[in-house]
Length: 272
Image 1 (spheres, one colour):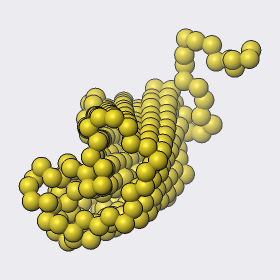
Image 2 (tube, helix red, strand yellow):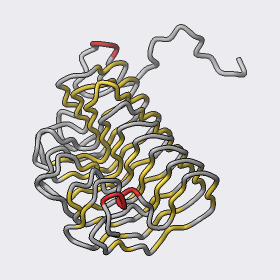
Image 3 (cartoon, one colour):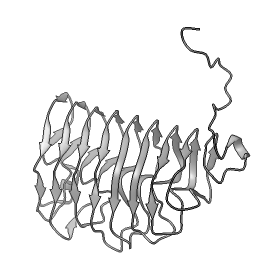
Image 4 (cartoon, helix red, strand yellow):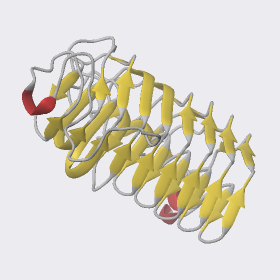
């Protein structure tokens, strides 16, 4: 790679339209001066694929996008992203997926290990950095950030008009010592929405919660069973109808035994 725009070009798959299915991306190793994602999706559908055992080994690689994958449109569906090892990348927003648009659904992002980042980097979402689009019904697990000097680090970060729903974030480990970080999930944009997401078994070096909410909306979610108290750090935004140990009943939040949010419809099974 030789130009700045190459950080958006997929090394193995660069999809602008059509269908990619039942493919495996493996043994890729980015060694150039410009870090590139293993796949990029601008349109079309990528489904039933596996992205596994890839790596970035070049130190000081210049990157601004997602190092595993990038989406600005289209759909990523039913794809397993497993055991990818990411090293240092200057100004990379994430070691995992960068989603600016489109849809990610029914995917597993497991075993992402980030081993370095510049002290000048303001964001480092190890598994997902999302500024737009929708991510739903996904698993984020065994996510590790080993760098302590990143200012805003977590497994998942929402920093735009993005929707994250019906997902599980578990077993995230974050070495960042900044209180703008989180054990697992950062929500920091007024138009970001987190809906029906569970965050559990995370740990962080900084004195912050598994969820760090400064703007946006978190609703109908569970944040519990994490290594450090409080489970939730909130300086802004709206947190409602959720379950976390520090909840005091405000906005329908509850400390244990989560219940249905108040609805105007019937909560009966289809068979009556």
